[in-house]
Image (cartoon, rainbow, N blue to C red; front, side, top):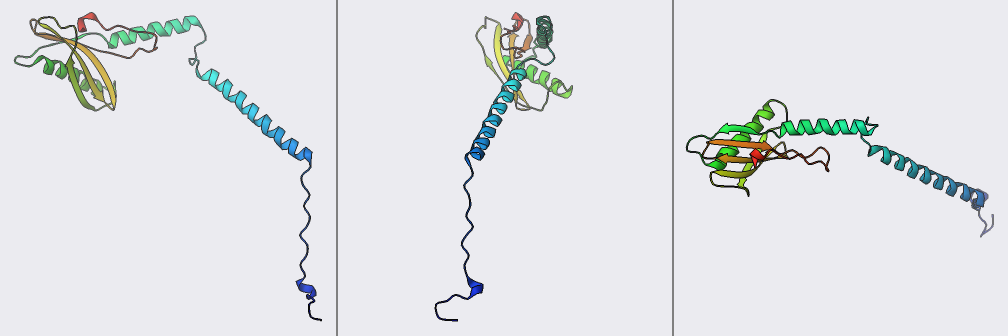
Length: 180
């Protein structure tokens, strides 16, 4: 072997020549991507439309019946409750004790999740003479339950109503006037 020659076992081979993908391969991959995106958009739009429809409700009469039943249930839940006002107890403390007692009863009966963690009552507009109006909030299981109530010091009674959110935002079910 002469100087400057590379032994035959150590010769470098030139790298293989790679051909660039032809134009039809690029067109096919772009076409598949566009088809996938269009199919995905159509699927999401179809699912979004059905997600906003009430489950199992197909007619206006069925929706009207559900709204009527919701009115009855919420109206019953918002019905006035009356308790005697104890002797020598402040009106704010009396109504707070009444709504907390009601909520603890609801928790123990399994109607709502508990425990009751906080409560508070403030004077509201609408107080006249011996009738003192209050707004109360009771928190149970991180949910705030609003109440409206009146303490009638002359009659020695507390009247309160739980205020439920309407089942349909456009439907407002008023609380009894006895509680405001």
